[in-house]
Length: 317
Image (cartoon, rainbow, N blue to C red; front, side, top):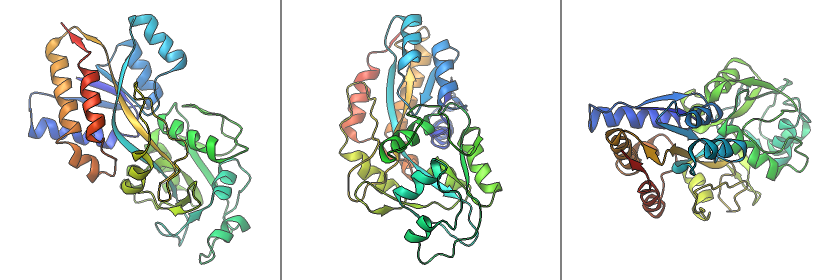
């Protein structure tokens, strides 16, 4: 079986599919192309994969294209929650030492704060010796669900953000990288760089992450616990298309989202659908230990039961 889409959950999906093949069913192999949500949704709509993956709900023109081709609604189900890190490369500043207020990170993203010795950064980091070094903002160059999660928050938190919300936006400043992998590489290779990546990529590449100010005015380090706090009070709608632009909890991490797998309502091969369904069921139950290990947020049992009901709608044969 094959799937394609978001880079955000790629470390998790690749571990899940490998572990399932090794520990559960050696005859079931799932290949996953980490190409970005935009490219993955195109492959899903075109029917060239068995499932798609996205960090942004399918909507707008893509939804219309899918409905026009298949004459039914897509089925999208959340597989995990995740959170983004402001990862940075700053000489002498270790993991969790840098604090970014809303004024600061909005200013960096919008190109108004351009040097690490800016007084606004110094104000919230009185104990750090900040260098006279240009800030190199690093963002995604491809259509990306990670970007959707990020700018969904920026649009809510930054009053003068000019570029709206989407999987691809016009950045006021900075350099672009392909995939979470590409942005992590840009940060790694350039002193003074800072950018947004799914936290697993920051951890994997040993990139330090900043504490950032949440809606309650508290500085929160990215963690599965803080992300879970952000998601736990959210009302997940019937179609699972939840977005949480700016969580309100005292200890909530501000930049969080869900990641979805998209399946078809009709599969011509019953065995293929049965295998895919079993993989997804395993991932949401026994596979949750991997979810936690890799710093993603497991789905609660109440949501898993709703996912099962939705997958019951799929027909095969």
